[in-house]
Amino acid sequence: MLMPPLVWRHPSLPLGTLPLQPPPPLSQIQIETEELDNDPRDKDFEPMDVDEASQPVYVSTTTHGLIQPPTLQPLQLGIDPEHHCIVCEGCKCAVQRHALYNHILHSHGHVSRLPPNIHAILDEHQVPHHIHAPNSKGIPVASIPIIEGFMCTIPDCGATGKLYTSFSHNHTRLAHPGIPAKDCITPCLIQVVFPAKNDYQAWPVDPNYATLPSSVDFASALDKIKQHDAFGWDDGLIQTPRDPRHVNGFLKEYRWLRITEGKNYGELCSLVDTPSAQNPALLPLKDKLEGYFNRIRPIVKEMAPLVLRWVNTAEG
Image: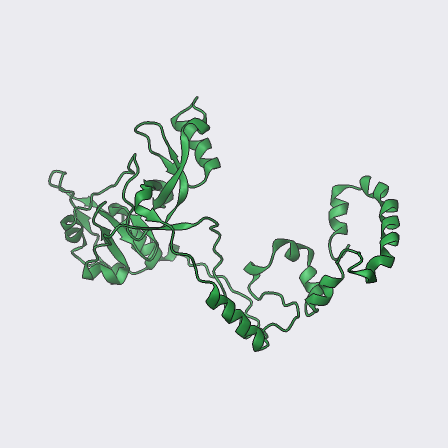
């Protein structure tokens, strides 16, 4: 069932309508799936999401939460009462009013579930047509992660970014040419409020309204590991992860996992111990190895780098 295009009028505009952009044909929407090698030998395997973020995530200390009209709850949408912006709790970001239709279509695929009175709801909560980033630190937007970032200290600027290198290069070069980045960029807490490439906005956050979450109790996790060991979950053998995302790039490139698969990792570790009085079994090899390396060192210095890389492979 096709839904007629929604139109709305901002209260500050004269009579008239501003139609939302029509969605692209459904045939253009492609959903990419990644097939994982779920090896039946590994009965305990469960695919895991890899979190590439290495920085801490802060939580808001404010008491206000999202306003959640009943008709928007199935879409995980709410409205921040402080900033009057639409927040998607599922995507942990805000959505500009004019981009709501496309966001639901591309990210959730439930456009037909948008209530017919969506614009009346947004008008009731004073959601503007377009929201601009603030130029000073303020109260965080509810339900959006708070992370460490950087902020421009030039008066009336307030631009923010996640990564110092790219932010300092791009922002100072374009907005403040001639001013060294070290003189105008300082660390601060930020929120990536609007992540869309064509309208990216990161907002600075007042640190008085954010704090790190309480420390994680690792006791339960350690207890689970002990239980796994007691039940024979760790059999002492090297097993290749069934999810390819969990394989180290070095091991994948040089195929060492293929060689060591099924071997006892305790015995393999003993082979690389440093010869010493505590490891006397390898002492007889010490002199022979030193002589070997002394003979090949002049040869290796003359080899091309690509040859040396090949020698380090399993095939070499």
